[in-house]
Length: 91
Image 1 (cartoon, rainbow, N blue to C red):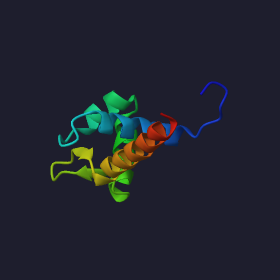
Image 2 (image 1 turned 120 degrees about the horizontal axis):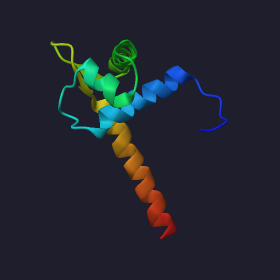
Image 3 (image 1 turned 60 degrees about the horizontal axis):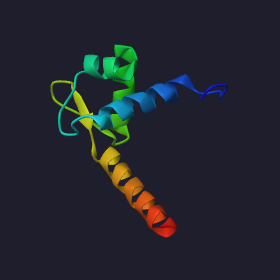
Image 4 (image 1 turned 90 degrees about the horizontal axis):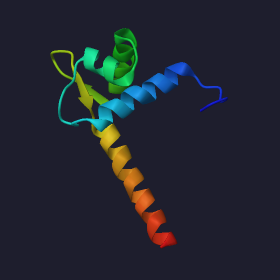
């Protein structure tokens, strides 16, 4: 991304989403873990995760921890389908 102009909040949101999707999808994780794993502050992680909950990409437990929601899983499955189709076409 050298030289590219980015919106830092969006970059941070993708970092949090990548971190959330890279781990055990069924395990709820704390804000502290999300912040450390994504390289953002705890406040940023919290706000990003709340936004992801509103968009169906994360779930929040009664205790306030978070995990990936079906939105992330559906996206991954769809991406896999698309990539598989392209690989077959070029094989």
